[in-house]
Image 1 (cartoon, rainbow, N blue to C red):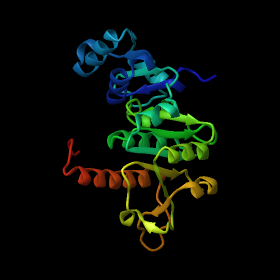
Image 2 (cartoon, rainbow, N blue to C red):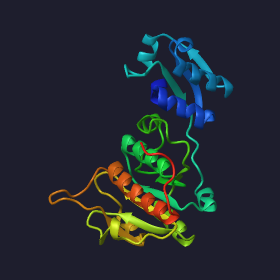
Image 3 (cartoon, rainbow, N blue to C red):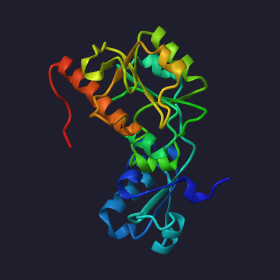
Image 4 (cartoon, one colour):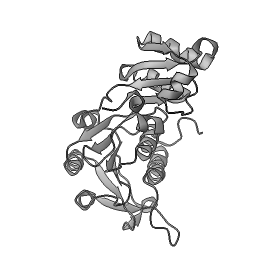
Length: 254
């Protein structure tokens, strides 16, 4: 079993997001000088309101817990992540679901989950085997933004893709050398975007289930992008199309 630091998330923004979005998933909040810093005192207030255990400690202790990371004076120990059920995502019938086929790098997974939340995806599917789960490293990579989008871990990703297709989703697989560029593909109202993991990409069985294979344009000599970068480009192209179909923009730009 790993130590406390294996479940620790640190930094003002990730901890505030965790406490605000999923207080039941936070076991302890550690703070340094919380009474004298408005940003930390706000986290302490939220944590007390949610009945989360708050422990004051000195900077040396927090450095030891976080292995000398830039903790900004606050950290939180997360409990077990609450995965969603595939059936719940199907019942909600969101316009956009993302399936990740064996993304194993926690930083990539965190970045993809953050982008999925940013574009309003209604669910993310992960296989239970050969895939990163939602750990503290993933939460750190997402700056805490993993709790507002349902994440389901499925035993068989190909079967899950088949289930969504049977319920009306159109599966678009992002593949290098796909038959058409994503910008040229006609996208329906309900999309299941399938993205492959580092190295091998989408496995053949899952790829065969996709209704459409799409690629991103690449300069000569470039074969592929990092999984999280490719996901970001594709998700925002889909979001651009969705906004255009609704006749306008929403939210704020960064």
